Image (cartoon, rainbow, N blue to C red; front, side, top):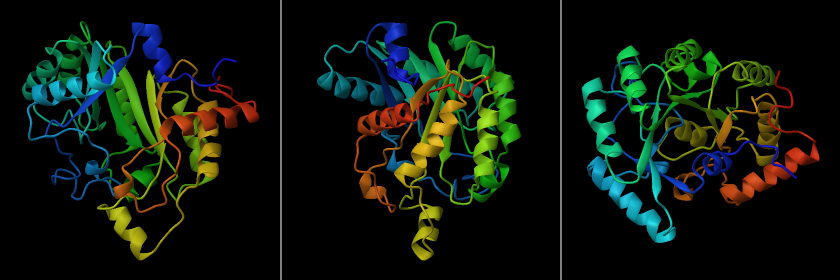
Length: 302
């Protein structure tokens, strides 16, 4: 039976015919809602230490080389790598500095591309032109973290940008040879069924190549974490999340490649109850869940 999901592993196999490993690095960036440009404190749910694997004290080259060595010990057959600029907003510097950093990663043997995590308000025409030029020879993906398609949620979590900013970033990037990815979080406790349906209708219209989705978890060292410890609120449970995720997936263009469906924060950072399954186990369980409802990616897409 074919999978009801268009997963990233299949995309990689069909595109490259072999395993391609992402190597996350820390380029020493910050965000405009942290440095005072748009606010302080960052997103209320975010603690980069809980998921970031890079070491900003090391050069980009050293971080990539360390990653190559680490993954080749586990998978000796590895020959191709994508460098993932992961921590904070990785277009939030002068374009000349960005060019230097991206080229430092791309010149390393075996690196076939870069994935750049950033915010939709940290991009402009000059930066897109840089990425467009790099995309002529490498796989270049921009991952715009929007997190929610509700402006009320974006305000409450201190994002400092709007849904419209996200849509303008998509418009600026689309058609330039750059692969487009976005990141959504499901389970903000104040979001309603109406918010979910609005997200479903919006997501089907966006020209995405990739998408990442995961459940809200409450993390130590965050503003939301401190609020939760003072006044606990409902955190989404697995069955709830599966139902919300099924609804989103059913409206998703079947051509969009799913890079992620669940978060995997280190348990030492979790305040909310961790789900015991691994990412692969959760994905397998969700596929069975979809099949039990005879649902699949794109079922309600038109």
